[in-house]
Every structure is written in C-alpha cells, then in structure tokens.
Amino acid sequence: MRLTKQQLDVIKQVLFKHFGEGSELRLFGSRADDNARGGDIDLYIEPDLHSADDIVEAKLNALVELHLLLGDQKIDLVINRKSGRFLPIYKIAKESGIRL
Image (cartoon, rainbow, N blue to C red; front, side, top):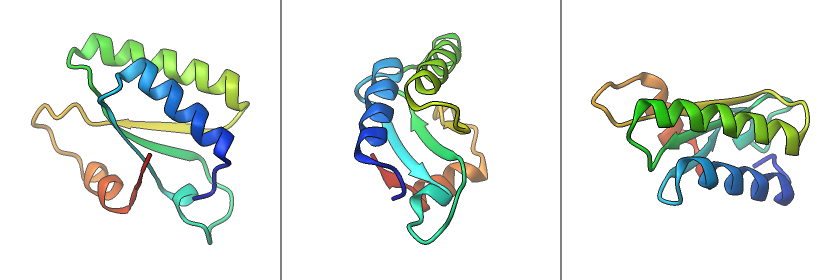
C-alpha cells in the first residue's frame, strides 16, 4: 500500500466520520500496488448511510475535508449503496482492494 500511516489515518477518520463507523472502506487501484508509481487515491465505500441525499452530502463534505488535510491530490470515491444496482467497478474494488 502506497500511503503513509498519517494519510491512512486521515482517510479512515474522515470517511468514517462522514459515512458512518459501520462503513466498509477499501483502497484499490495503483495506490494499493506497492510496485506501481504515481496514481490517484481510489477508495471504495459501502456506506452506513441509506438516503441518497445523505450519501451525496457525505461525499462532498468528505472530499473537501480530505483535500484540506491531504493537500492537492486526485481522490476518487466509489460508493456502493447496495441498492441492487451493480457496477463492474464494485467487483474490481472489492476483489483487488485492501480493506482499511
């Protein structure tokens, strides 16, 4: 995993704060690969929230806070509401991602 302990702690704290302590969080993509270089921070979330409005608000607030605390980095949040809609990225993120 190519994140510092401080970055990891910030990410977990911010995402649990906005999406709920019972949320599942995973890091996937190039930052999950120790042999890769560069890349954005790709995060998969199964939120502890159910309302679409609450999830949108949480996403916006979390991204603002992450950018303030981590600096100017590209951060992608993939959010699986478990509403029955399946996207292939969910499978990729769950299978290749590292649980935070």
